[in-house]
Length: 287
Length: 351
Image 1 (cartoon, each protein chain N blue to C red):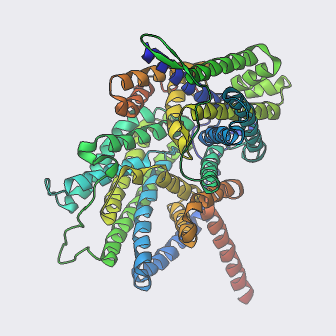
Image 2 (tube, each protein chain N blue to C red):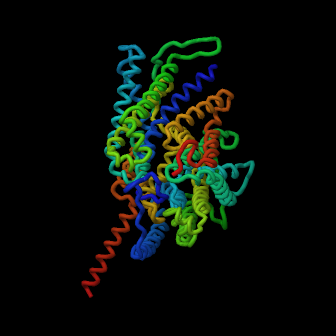
Image 3 (cartoon, chains in turn yellow, brown):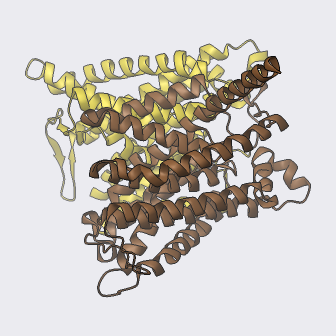
């Protein structure tokens, strides 16, 4: 049973991280390589909020404040990125990819210089746990998994049931068709970057509350996210979600059987295997 | 940066743009620049080490090894793909040499050179089966993940690779014809000769029918396919050739340092290689070398602020992408064109 809890909590993390990347690719047709750094910034916002508010308000309240502050500030950074770099280079999607690669190093250096290269740990904000005969579920993990579930549901409702959400999907499906329907590409791009980078910060805050935060956490998480979105099909949101759960289950099982150190190789081999037969991923559309 | 690859169907209107092809005039200029820079570079390369301090000499040797590495990288980009597994594959060459020259195997350094190239070549040929099914972003992401997994195996298979501690006490090459490679200067000439031979081979390869076919495939894969070119094969050969060169560079890199560990082949070196290709431009073989020179100069100028160097590189990459999408090489070329034009005008005025 414990393994099931671990699977769910790892799935929650993979889904929230990969979803933002997939959403941005779907609309912008480019990969934001600084996604990992936005995620890292989210983690640092949590650390900062904890430092400021510790002892003043209870843990869960600190966590909520960090979520609001982190997602909005990092989301605004993403918006700024869209309005500057992405807009200047909009006719060259591949140049954007390379520029965000440069940007990720800029952010990493700045964090290392101003906060320090060492990892920072965040105290447990949700104290206590549920204990049954077969498993231990800390409230912390329960809160994280619950929040991801809520976030995915909200995103799903937004994308399928609201007008702005539908414009996002329209642009992802066919940008020219969307423009002909009077949808503003600039507005949809800005909205997507805001939500996508906000999601990156969201997962950074969630993982920061469980593990420690350090300047290289983004790079570590990013390549796993690449495997997930490639297997799921780049740009496909349901594909990313399904592949995230798949890899969470796989990695947790590998850890449980004592083969955790082989997980990166096995994951990569699985990705290469999938690519050999489905070059566009499991749920990706043919170019 | 105008990167050549097949147009994405989802790209509409001004989203996809093709790089203009070189005109006859530019080709003429290129030969002119080529001869001048070869002579200048050869002269500088021969006498430079005698003017430098011990530390600078070592930087110079590493620079030449990195030139070899980016030349291999540029070969891969000619087929339209930007790999992120290049330095991890280079590690394959390093580990081949480091393991085989240990006491229990006792293989000669000189024998490990071709073996390293073959190891990197075979691995990349196997890797190319899945990753070359992908293009553009997919290719970048899948090589990123595959390269990172390869690097993780250096860490995990501790029995072979020494894990995170890596391998140390790698012996220098055995002397041949009485020439020993213990000193930095002799090592410099050794890597210089190899780099020049590789560069000449690549220039000939690029100009050959084979090399031009690879460029054609990169510019328009569908068209190439429709006139009966086996595009898959050409892309694979560019990938394998570039990787094999990385394997050779890896041998020298590990051997010169005398010690390797998995962190050597991580994303920071990969970023340096990609940044060199972008800052310099990949239209010609000189572009990445120019880019690497620029990055190395930055690194050494800000030696006392080493932590800030990746930031400077990042700013340079973004600046080049915005203001000179074809890299420093294109700025240098247009500058030379203008110089040449004014010299011609001067001559016209005089005669």
